[in-house]
Image 1: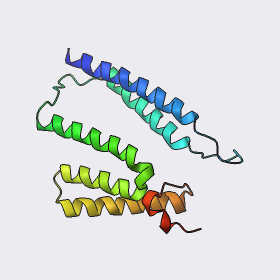
Image 2 (image 1 turned 135 degrees about the vertical axis):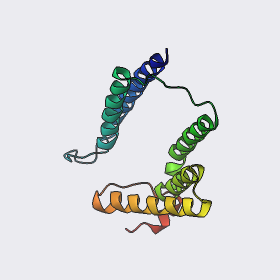
Image 3 (image 1 turned 90 degrees about the horizontal axis):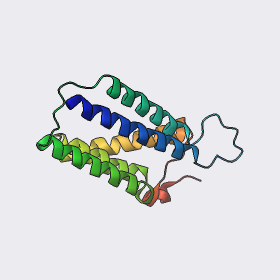
Length: 151
């Protein structure tokens, strides 16, 4: 019966991946529309990775998969709540602040000291922001830090 849980979960994840991939194709095309990499590229790649991972879960389920309804289960629920909040706060707070909060909270929940966790989150947020904005030329939301934007 334990392998059936993995298979059901894999099927649900495939449905999520298909919905996510379809949603990515609905993103508006950039002006001109001739770019090879558009706003749908990264979400489509994520959905493909999720489908492949889900297929592996269906084909090769873990024979001994006990559900972690102890402290680990609680931490998993907290992680999901943090990620949902991250998605909700991304636009109003901006990428750097919301990433700082999300990564910092997750690092702290994994045992890091709070100051070190949130410094790590801030460094990750700034590094990824700079990578996307300047190396990949993909704009991320600035949110409340929009006064820092260079015109």
